[in-house]
Length: 289
Image: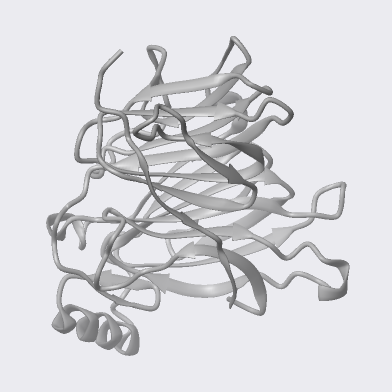
């Protein structure tokens, strides 16, 4: 055990936002020049599950440059296709880690699962200046390829990073990310070493638990659905409430500490680069190969 626990700095209640073709989302944070969660830019939780909302239309063809988008599905699926000719479906438990690099056009069309719902998340991860214009690429990981560790009431699906000696399948990402889906049985405890300096957040979407460690050793009580922002330290501790399970995604990564200029689906380092992205769209030279 180490002796520098991460305390909870902030608990965020997501706002409801509309994106794409009238898609309702819960947004914990979005891109800003202040970039407080560097290297993470945005975290959305799909929220379009009320039948009165009618049919899901999704996200018609749109561009990205300078970022990575991470889609993790829990229920339902998302069909996608892009300007590189890729076509596929992300189903329950699957992950798509898309590096947009210098430019890609893609569409994402959700479809409800057997229960009539679509459940999942999208995370945006920044790219460092040196990789903003890199070739686009995908890492698509089906559910069966994601290792799961279960013991002492703790279940961890490791998408990226390492837990209990097991390494996740998503690799070669500039931010050196950690991305895990963690489920705790009532009163069980999760502990993980996280490098000092890495930005670290957790999104609790089921149940309740105690996050971090305060001066008295106890954690901050958090109920679904909230984003937990951790301060600095070298480990994270979470304990489920005695009368409830807790399920959350834990995300951490190394900040790039570079100025950014976000503009819709683009995140670059200067306003001139944003203007160039718009010019490339107009000129038909946006898509990178």
